[in-house]
Length: 254
Image 1 (tube, rainbow, N blue to C red):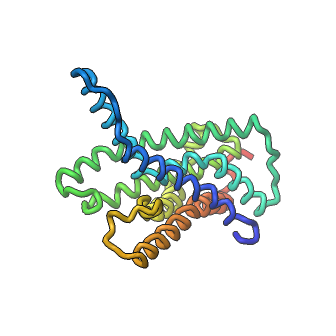
Image 2: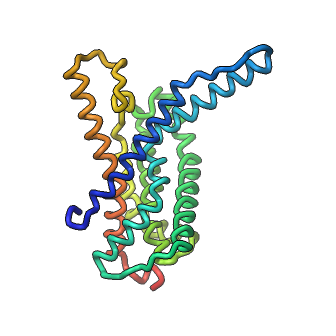
Image 3: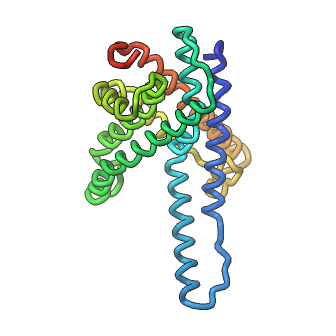
């Protein structure tokens, strides 16, 4: 990775994660100022606060996945670069094809996210009703497997789109190789379980009763965690491309 400069590309998800965290904190801390003179103004005030709170929570809980979507162009490029290093095959760059590939990647990601939540919603509700916390329920490993499958699906599709498989063919391909999608996606999703404390990253230590050196140590740990998380999508797309190189070429059109 060092020899081919892959670590350099981690700078992109690094700053994207910071941007998502910053935007989330801004929404969370925002106070909606408005002249409230009647009941209608009160309704709008409450709706605005709820909307901003929901967005803030979504960004905080799904920062890794949001960055994953935003990284679609980079993931496409890194997959192509990895295959070029392995096989010597060069894919000429064309802006028209680039935008088509990016839109397709986003389409697959959104499709997978929708199906993921369709499957997960009843599992999450059962966990909350009977165990109170999702992480403490025996259903949690199933939840990770579902999320891992769809993340693996998205990673494999970067290679499938380069091999000019249609979305429907890509879906059939991944279904035939569920084990491959699961093995790659589960590792990806487990690594994403590392939680970032964006308050610490933005020098807000109000939630921590610590002195200067304790605060400095907390900050250093969060920076290292952020750096590691920034490498996860880079390592994942490389692993997916390497794995797909081993798949029998008869499964895909030449």
